[in-house]
Each structure stands twice: as C-alpha cells, then as structure tokens.
Image: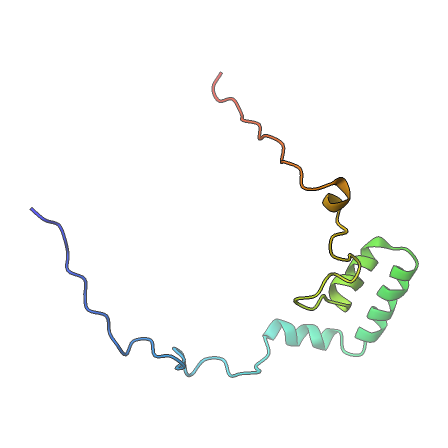
Length: 110
C-alpha cells in the first residue's frame, strides 16, 4: 500500500515578479509609531545630546567613544572601520588565528 499523496499543481499566477502581495499595506515613507514618538520627545534636544556625547568621548569616556564611533559616525558598508585599519586586530598582532579551546562536557547523573 502506498501513502504517496499527489502534490497539487503550482499556481503560475501566485507570486508574480514585481507585484506586492499586500497592495493596501504600509505606504512607502510611512513612519513607525515608536520612531515618531521618539522624535517628538527629542525635538530640539538632539544637537545638545550629540554634543554632550562628543564632549564626553573627547574627555576619555570609553562608552561615549564607542557610541560616537558606532552611531554618530557609522561605518559605511564596504569600508574598513575608522578606528581599526584592516589587519590590525588582536589576532593579527598575535601571529594568526588560534584554535578555540575544547568545550567542557557536563557529567550527568549521580
């Protein structure tokens, strides 16, 4: 006895290229509600907050430096990180990649 069930034939018009599956969906350029609320809360304060983060970074605050490098000056795709030239990582200085340590297994039972 065979349990093979015949598969239905694919519908050739089901997914057409270039046609949205939800034409009444969110229009292009529509803002997320949370983003709009955050913009209203920070209205007029964004410049001051960015200036304060930069001042703290220049004063030596490591977290502020990281924030500035990651958020204020984001890395463009396809370019090297501005603070780390290519090939200057920890592994490059150590003479190449090291194998990862073996994983420990937990003993089960009494």
